[in-house]
Each structure stands twice: as structure tokens, then as C-alpha cells.
Amino acid sequence: MTQPRFLLVPQLDLDEKWVALAQTFPGKFLLVAGFSGLLFLHEISYWWLLSIYLLAFSAWPEKRWGVLFAATWSFLLVGPTDFHWERISHLFISAGIPWEIHNSLAGLPLILLTLLIAGGYIHLSQRCPQRLRRPILVLTLFFLGMMLIASYAPLPRTITAGMWVFLTLLGQYYWFVCFTLKECRSPQALSFSRQVGQYLPFWEPTVIPYPKGSGYLRKIEAKTARDFAICQLKGLKLLIWAFWLKLFYFTASLIFFGQAGLLFDRLLLKNESGKIALYWGGRFLREISALPHLTQLPRFESAMNMAATGNPLPWQMNWAVLLSDFLCFLLYVAFTTHIVIAVIRMCGFNALRNTYRPLESKTIAEFWNRYFYYFKELLVEFFFYPTFFRYFKKRPVLRMYVATMAAAFFGNFLFHFIRDIWFVVELGFFRALFAFHTYFIYSFVLGNMIFLSQWRQEKVSQMKMGVISRWLAPVRVLGFYCLLTIFVDFRRESISENLAFFLSLFPFS
Image (cartoon, rainbow, N blue to C red; front, top):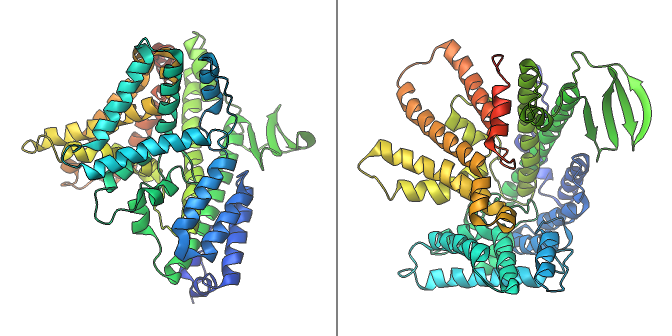
């Protein structure tokens, strides 16, 4: 008789009793209730609102697209969706327009106007496919051109402010519009009115579309009651696993950096003179025994600042800071994006995970695919494939190199340049480009290394790897990305500050 295995996450979707229960009304209610409790433990401040949406998805699965539209737009008006209203208000006031906007409800006319213009462009792309053959490229050139005009053209301040506000709002929807432009010429394309319900969706209203466009959502949606039940159970499973990852993150933060908080930081543990002090709601409760090997490293930002000012920490400690920060960041990305995918699955869309076992990656290209899947997919859809299928068809190596650089280098850089448009508003187009020089170098190195990884993988795949090589491959990959993260921080005056920390990792410095 086989002994039952202990599992951190119960395999609910493989148990027919749970699948049958999840298809009943009481079972659906129980499932949403358990999911809501975990959302609260995950410190999602709007857990109660998400619970209402999920109840609606569970009650009317056949009307999920209408529920999605209502949920997204109601969440946009009352949730934490960030349109930078404070900065937009400052733009208006500095241009002599007495209009202060404090929330999305007050700024709704501007949002609707932006989407109306985007919808008109999408309609034009559908009606005139011969004249507008590459609508995404035209949109990108239009966006960058408006940046240049708003930065340097001698226009009245009111017009300049209006252009920046339009670009800011369009930037929030930019990649969603690109997915619609990509899908709108398909015979089975959804109407714009239905697709706009997935723009800045309630499960993750950020500039990265989760999970890609509406066409992909329709492809992965549950078609039967059984599929829907299994999809929801998979969502609950993933949320349970995300909670375990959150506890690992909590423990790692406490061990490495001497402080960690849970339940909206009501429960706080601090390393004070080698002892762990327990706080609840800001009030000291008691001291508990210290964990073994407890350290209190400075945060990565502090260590980099010390190196930049010429007073670096010892090189061994800088390595400890870098490795600890990188590990904690991986855990943070994993559990936060797992929460998003879990909510998507609860809505009946069987989406793939965004982060999937990145520590097992044996190549740089594989890590890029496992670490942030949907950002990688965005770059592949709009930069890699268009380049790969259009240029250098008779030169396969050059074709792969140019397509990889178009995605990991140019597309990566362009994404962040559009996302952080406020650098351009404050500095002007060309000064902002220079301010991004650190990220430019980061993207350039990343693109080249991903290509070399792909090229080398083709060579190595024909040979057998030894045991030692298989074990060392993930170490080399993680070491590369760990060092490369030093140059992700582009909000500094010069790359010399990043280089100072990089050099402080070696004893000769």
C-alpha cells in the first residue's frame, strides 16, 4: 500500500469530487470564499471588490465577456489604477488650465476621448488595409513624433499640455491597442467594444497586457462547465502556492535584511541587537529567539549609493547584498504575478503562469522565457516575429540575431521609454534618451547574450552535457542575470554609479 505524499499544494483539479463540487452553486460560493480569504492574506487591499467580481464570473460564466467589461470599467473608476493624475493636474495648472484631477472618475472624459481616438485609428486600419499596411509601426512613429513635437515645437502651452496628457493616457493603453491592431484584421476578431473591456483589466491594470490580447483570452477560455470548474480549481491551487512563496519571501527578507512584514505590515518582525522583536500594529509585543545565521544586510539601493559616493562596503558584503536582493526580487515577482494569474483562472481563462521555475533555467534565453513570460511574449509578438519573417531570409544566423536584438534590445528599450514618459515630459526627448543610457547598455548586452545563448544551444543540443555541466548551467545563468540587474537602475545621473558598484564586487577595487 502506497503512503500518501505530503504536498504543499493539494491537487484539487485532479480530484473528481472537487471538480463535481465546483460545478454546483454552493461549491462555487465555497471556492470564491476560500479564494477571497487567501486574497486578504496576500494583502490585496481591494480583495472584497475582486470577490464580488469573481462571484459574478462564477454565477454567469456564459456571460463572462460582459462581466469582464463591467468589472474592468468599474474597477478603473474606484480602484487603484494609476493614470498619474497628480502630474496631469500639474501640467494643466502650469499651462493656465484650472483643472485638478484627483481620480479616474474625474478624469473619465479624458480617458474616453483617448480611447475614442484609438478606436478611430483601429477602425481606419480595418477599413484601409492596403493604405495602412503596418498600423503598429505607424502608431509607434506617431507616438514618438508627438513626443518630439511636444518637447521642442514652439506651441502654446495649452496645446503642449494637451499633447502630453494625450500621450500619457495613450501610453497606458498603448500595448493593448497594439494587440487589437494585430487581431482586428482576423475574420474572427472581436469588436473593439468587446476588446476594450480587457484594456487595463481589473486583475492587473498595468501597461503589460495580462495575458496578451483578447484573441488569446478567447483561445484559453473555458468552454464547458467542467472546464470552468477545473480552471477555477487551478486558480485556487496557484493562489495557495503563491502564499507559500510569500512566506518564503517573508523568511528570506527577515534572514537577509533583518525586517519583514505581513498583513499590511500589521505583523512586523525586526532584528534588533541580534534578537527578533515582534510588533503588531506598530506596538511592541515581545522578543523571540533569533533565527540561525540571521544577518542584517543593507538594501541594494543603499549599497549602490555607498559605492557611488566612494565608500563601498567590503566586496564580500556587496556580493551578499546583490545575491540576497536578487533572490528576494525573484520571489516577489513570482508570488505577485501568481496572484494575477490565479484571478484570471478564477474568471474562466486558463492562462499560463508568468513566472515558472526560473531557477531551473540552463540558458540565458530560457531564463528570459521563464522569468517574465508575458513581457517576453509582448516583445516577441511585436518585434521578434515581424523582423524574423520579413528580413534576411537567406541568412539564418543574421536573421536570428537581428530579430533577437529587435525584441530584447530595441523593443525592451522602447517599452520602458514609453512607460516612463514623465522623463520625457520633464527633460525633453533627447535629454530623456540620454538619461536612459544605462538601460540602453543593459538592453544591448541582454539582447546579445540571449542571441549567443540561442546560437550556442543549437550547438550544445547535438552533444550530451555532463553531470557537472548540467549543475553549473543554472549557476552561470543566474550569475549573469544577477550581475546584469546592477544596470537595470537607469534613474541615476550616470552609468558610472552602476559601474562603481560593479567594481566594488571584486577585491582588487
